[in-house]
Amino acid sequence: MFLSGAISGNQDVSADIGDTLLVVLHPALDQFGDPDQETDTSISWMWRGATGSQWFTRDTATWAASSECSVAQRRSRFEKDSIYYYGDRGLPYNNVSPMTPGEGWYWRSVRVNQTATITMNLPAVKPDDPSFSTFRVRLHSTSPQQVTPNHKIRVRINGVTIDTLKVNGYETYSGSVVFPSNRLVVGANVITMTSLSSGAGTNEVLVDWVDIEAPNHLLAVNDSLWFAPPIVTFGTVTRFVSGGWTVDPWYAFRVDSLGNIHRWMSLEQTAGSWSFTDSVVPGARYVVTTRQAAMAPSGADLRAPTNALNVPSGADYVIISPHEFSSTAERLRAYRAGKGIGRTTIAFVDDLYDQFSDGRMSGSAVRNFLQAADSLWPAPVPSMVLLFGDATWDPKDHFKTGKRVFVPTLGNPVSDALFVVDPSDQFMPLKSIGRLPASTTLQAEQFVDALIDYDSRPLSAWNKRFLFFASGFDSLETLRFQQF
Image 1 (spheres, rainbow, N blue to C red):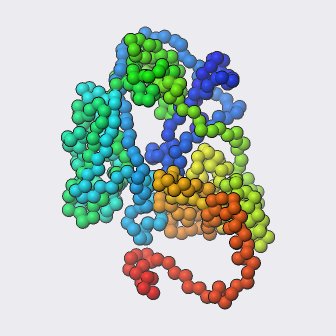
Image 2: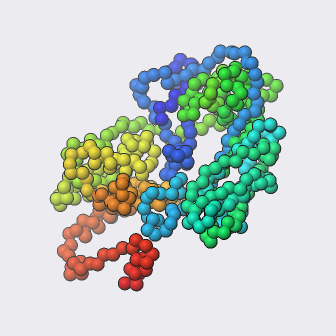
Image 3: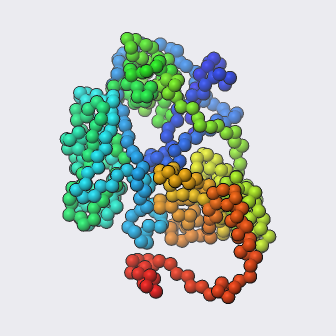
């Protein structure tokens, strides 16, 4: 958010018809640098009336280069979400936080004497470079600790063993191995990870992602190039020479780790390659692209920020609903208020995204809103929460079910109870919470009709005799309940 940008056009630092707004965005990642659990959509905001030196014009200054660079280290990550893992240890932990680290999705499952094979295409790698390369991987053990180490994972690149990784039970392992770059080849590189026998009775490891950082020629891939300059170029004026373009590249940008543009440069064509010159600073990254390869936004909305916490009287009963169910949510709110449930209010989930997660769909936005309401609203704090709309534990639709998130759920494994638990005791909900899983306006209306109809009926005799029980704290208690 609040990234600096550049306007391509008549260079008057004014957005006119025909100008192009250029912004460098990163993929949607969570606080751990993993793909966001709930959305792949990156969102950027432009604020009317914002002040500061946010916009850059093209720097046409020419500098005499003291060195030339056509090779740089580049990281290539390979990841696929194929397996959903709900958490460790089984009962009673598989329905509560703390959740398993990561976004809950993994690529491959490897058991003892099994091998996961992953092919990485590295079209610009330079195997004969004297510098070293780095292999990185994240694994998660789904097995309890039995021996040390619990798992031994042999890693080979193109048939050559580079290391055997040692992983403990229930451990999330993030590790790296440095190896000679000549183990790599231009094009397809085959990585195998084999689980060797460790003596553990149960032995399963999940592969989350792998990446390789290696010296690469500055060759464009799909008419785009992103790289970090070599350390030896820091503090020098360097000419960076690139190739592999199918059409003329547009501009080159020096950006920081957040994507803020610090310099905007033109390129020169010489002998079939394209180059630009810059005074290299530590932490710099370079982005070069063609007009055709630059991505266009999927949409743009004019948003007037709202404050969902602006409820002077506070509330006892909170409905969280998408805007499209607003009329039905209001009908339910008015009905509950008329039945003496106490103070009532509606918070629209789209507004919560804007206020608490920078516009991105996020269950954390709902949780943060409820926690802020407890702190800022007049006492007593809300005691009842209704989530008005359906959700799914697969919000990015990896399994192609077509289900849509109307009001998100939270956690891995997902649980609506996590919205209202005591932060110091994940077993203890502090509020009553429920969900009406409507996925259409008609379903929303039918749910409310059914609730009102149910409330209007007198209780029968059977409604007054109940025995409630739930699964026990361990497998023995669970068995006793099943046999009751």
